[in-house]
Amino acid sequence: MIVTVVSIFITYVCILLGLAFFTLLERKGLGYIQVRKGPNKVGIIGLPQPLADALKLLSKEIRKPILINQIPYYIAPVLRLILALIL
Image (cartoon, rainbow, N blue to C red; front, side):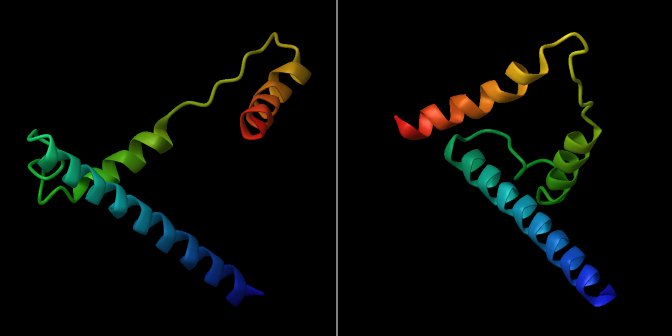
């Protein structure tokens, strides 16, 4: 059981790191194409950029309105997605 949990954790971390550095690669390419400062000119080869993105994502506050009708609030995005996929 412990081996399975550790394996899942390692896989999850590897996927997140791969995604972070794929985003860095994309930003570098866009920076070169648009001839602007991007992560290719900021920091050490832009390596701090994925860490800054992850820190920003984790530090965002999750808010939920207090006085809402909960059924329409949660059902509306699902219905919108279903309608978008059908049409």
